[in-house]
Amino acid sequence: MLRIGAIFIAVCMVLIATSVGAVLFLGFQLDPRTSAIFGLAVLIGLALYNTISTRLQDRTLLGDQIADLSRGTADLSRQMAEMSRRVAAVENTAGSDGQPPARGQRSDGRRNRRTRRAGPPDRRNGGGA
Image (cartoon, rainbow, N blue to C red; front, side, top):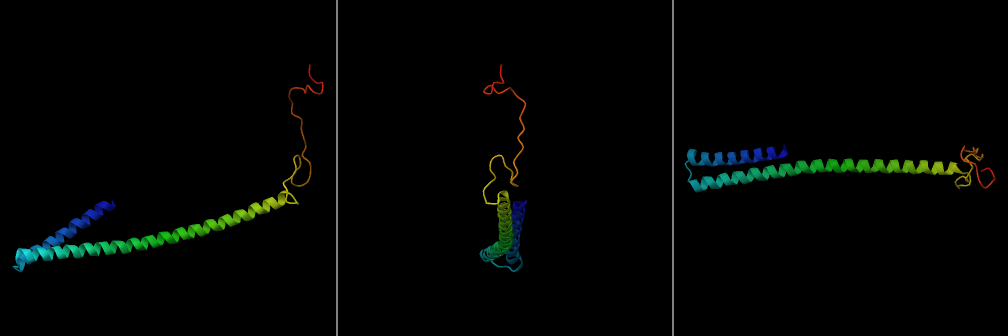
């Protein structure tokens, strides 16, 4: 849709410049070369005005986008610091000495209950056929 708008503006600028040249030639009885030069000058002026105003608008939008990205980066940094703090807290509570719990022990120091799974009898202990 943006290209259609740009094409429409360009066509309108050409029509305005042509109209100025025609008015100078037909209304003020200037020679064709002078009225064409004035029409071309009007077209160049309109094109410059359009370009500068578009650039200023883009610069404003770009500044807003950079500010949004900056806020997003700061928010992400804050969230990462919070996550690091939480991970450190979990690591500190995992073992009182800073080590992970030993195999077969829980983090609160009690031993896990081992339940024997039902399965084939162990042949090493003479339980097999």
